[in-house]
Length: 394
Ligand code: 3PG
Image 1 (cartoon, rainbow, N blue to C red):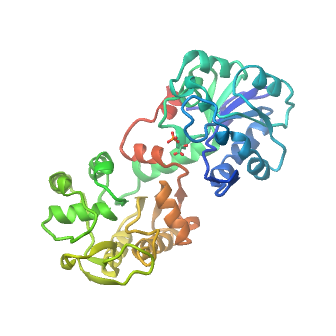
Image 2: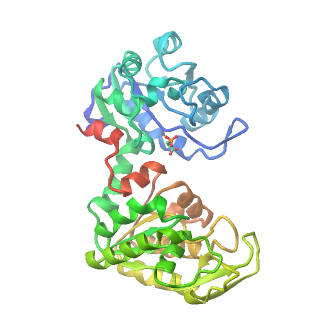
Image 3: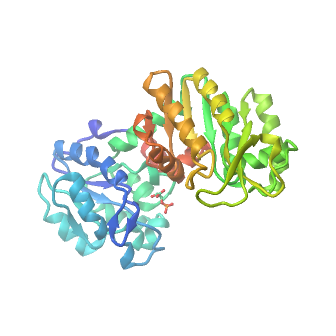
C-alpha cells in the first residue's frame, strides 16, 4: 500500500479517516490516546502541502443524527493535541461540508461531523461515498482501529480517490506483522478474558501460529473444567468444555504449548478487597470462585517470556479491574516490560481491557507497541482480512 511519502498531496484537500471514537464523560474526553496518535499524520499531510479534512465516526447512532454523539464535543481535545484551531462542519457531506472545506487554506485542518449520522456509512453506499469523495483530491486512512468495518469512510472512499495509509495505520500494521505475521521466534501469545465462546476463532488461529499460548482470565476456567479440574463457583462455560478439549488436542498436534494457571487466587465474594486465598489449581473450594492466577503461574510465565522473542497480548489474566485480583496481570506485565527494555522481547498488546490493565500496571510505555484498536486487533489476531486495510492494498 501507499503511504503519505508516496503520494502527491500538494494543494489537495486530503480526506483523512481517523478514529475519534474516544471515551467521553459529560462532553469531555477522558482518554485522548487515539487523538494524540493521529497528530503525526495530520502534520505530515500539512508538511506535504495537503489540507487534512478529518472524517470519523463516534459511537453507534445507526444512521441518524444524535446530538449526544456529535463529534463537535471532540474538537477542544483535538485542538489541544494539534496545537491549532480546527474548523468543524456539522455534516460530512453536502452544503455544510463544502462551505467549511472551501474556506480552508494550506496549514488549516477541519473535522467533519460523525459519518455514522448517515445510513450510507455503515451500508458502504456508493452515492454517499461519492458525496464525501467530491470534497477532496486524496484519501488517507489512519484508522486501523476501524479497519474491520467495511464502511463508506473506511473502505468505499479508498476505491474512489488516490488512497494511502497514515502514520498510525503504518505503525499498527508494522507492529502486528512483527508480532504475528513475520515474528522472531519463539512467539508467546497471552489470551485472557471472560469467555472461550467469544475467542474461539482467535484461539484456533493462534495455535497454528504461535509456539506458546497462555490462557488466562475466566476462559482459563473452562479449560480447567475440560481437564477435569473442579472450579467451584467460578465463571466457566461448561458447555464449551468439549471445544476446549479439542483446542488442547489440536495444540498438541501443531506443537503449540498451552499454559494454564498452576495456582489460583480464590474468593467467596467478587468485590474489592474481598478475603482471598492462593491455592494449587486443583484445590478450588466448592463455594469459591477463581478470580486470578497465583504467583507460581507468574513464575512460569517469567520462564516462558525468558525463552521467547515475541509476545502478543490480548486479555487480562484475572479480574484485573478489582483489587487484589489484578496481581497476576500486573506481575506478568512487569516481567514483559522488563524483557522488552532489556531488548530480549518484542511485545505487542491490544484491546481495550488489555491496554487499561497495562496502563494500570504502569508499564504500557515499556511495551514495543500498544495498539489503539479493540475489535480490529481481535479480528486481525483471528487471521481475518480487514476491509479497510484490504482496500488500501488492492
Ligand atoms: C472502536 O472503538 O473499536 C472502533 O472505533 C470501532 O467502533 P465500532 O465497534 O462501533 O465499529
